[in-house]
Image (cartoon, rainbow, N blue to C red; front, top):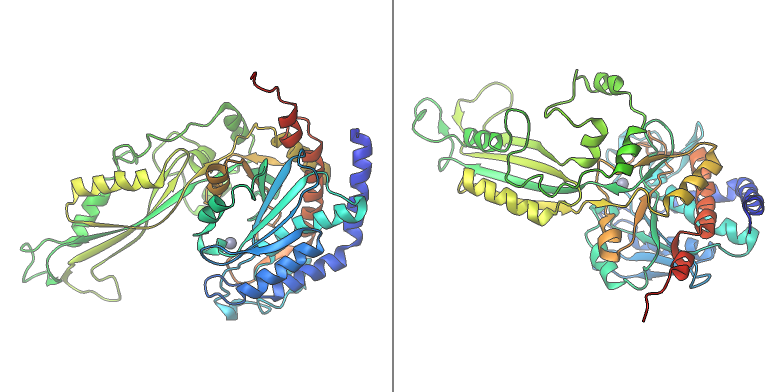
Length: 473
Ligand SMILES: [Zn+2]
């Protein structure tokens, strides 16, 4: 089918989506009314069951799949084995609602104010993954079939850092096989424009405990006689950086992959108001080390962050004491190809060398991930978003934050992109979480257009694979 008749078909789907705004919103409200707090387990089973029903109503062959933790909801519609397959990922669990008294309307009683739906889970992530399901429903209503194969996977433990997603994916490689993973979560770019994100930094969180004497001592009567744990910790921490701000843990940045030419071009094209960032942060320059600019720091460089320090007495008044224990919490952000296990080993060796006896505990980690920004999936997605919004999206090589995208890239071996539909000020994880209804509806349109463009692309997925020359026998 040529571009023009395809676009006429899409326009018909868009009109259908516009006409169905009220029932689509009613489905979102129904999903949100069902609490699903993974941290406490509240409503998880019931929500998984409801999601399965919504998926089935949207035309997918849907079922619950057990994991080592909470169940996942899986649905698929296989149109043609030779067509490209899109794996849509989302999560049905939500964050706890505390502090409850800071909510203007109760968190599980959706309330529309000023064009926004206020409720826990509105943007993170029920509204965003429902947009994909409703796009599937709309294709089927108008055209009777999808232009690609679609698989939808909804997790129930995303807000707990997805502890069982990798093992689940590993056991279901065939079921989840696809040409691209597509995720809508988080906010649009801070400029308000839609962004296509191709990766995320990883993390490694550790707790470092340094001890001095057997217990705290009077700083006068024993001052100069017993070691001070706080000084030991400060010395150890300062051994991890030089005066220019460069991290001095041996091998810390050895595995860092430099940006590709396409990635450099992409970050150069991103809008940035550095002055307003600096003003908002109350600083007059970026911290050392000098060199990498804003986006390169955020996407292509690891960080070593002291996230918390505790020792001695820091309360009201004063206590003359020599602390016997000092604790630091460190948060390391990792970029490709840094491995959390290898990084932990480097850190342990550094600590053993500089503060023998200090205790290092690994609290948590997530691997970094990166998908090529110039792969065959990019042009169709850009084309789809441009069609819906009249403006091309921003291409963002990586989030500064962390998402379990490595499960797609490394466990399943498929590329992944994140196309958030939610507003910047969605207040996810906080009281008064909200989703702009206009963005919800636009998300449905974007998903519908993405299905179309990926299905029609000559270079993406199943058809491209089929036409690739076979190796000689
Ligand atoms: Zn979240």
